[in-house]
Image (tube, rainbow, N blue to C red; front, side):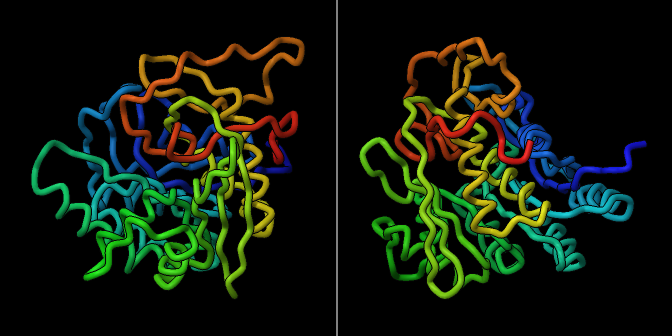
Length: 314
């Protein structure tokens, strides 16, 4: 047995059979950043690279048992929360977070996992958002979401104001009021070919990170960014430096992105393991006929640039 064990990240998210997002993306990113990922599954999706067909939501007691089995056995150093699946699951996760307040938490509130067509989508989203806002966001170290998603979240919570035109600063101010220590707004601004991701923190601090635009739609870019941040926080890196290094890792992963199916491309989280003498094949032509749910999607979120030759914490 090795004397040195890598830091362990506990990640809550769905199982994506394509490997582009969810716990598989988290695990690969954490491994690339020098950490071990333990995973608590919130839902099992039926999807390919073009669409999400259905999902089986995991019972909240099963989710709680998964997570506590890990926490009671392994020295977890950070927690990452992705797709929670349901309000019941959100409550279960919140209780776990409250039992381990010393652990940094990165929350990447992905779109709701759909299980069939029961109930009103708008009502379900609003109910889930309320639980996330009241129970998980106040326990979050870094909340990561795109400007578009931040506006959507705030619109669900708004009574008489319409945040569709709010800029990143105003959205972040509102989200910080919800209790998050830091808010990372991706695609906060576009400057030429650069997509600016902006970190807002205590005392009105602002940190800008940029990624060069890539004309591809990605699935799993948000998972990559948030998991990388969690891995760096687990290693004792300060929030600002962790966000900077994670942004650089994402840039390189998107630069080497590839398409295996007929739909979205996925980041290459093992870009650093390629042959130095060979040139990465370019991904296929741009697609623009479906919504991208993660940073890195053409026209909505983060893109790649060249950066350095390997991950910051491989």
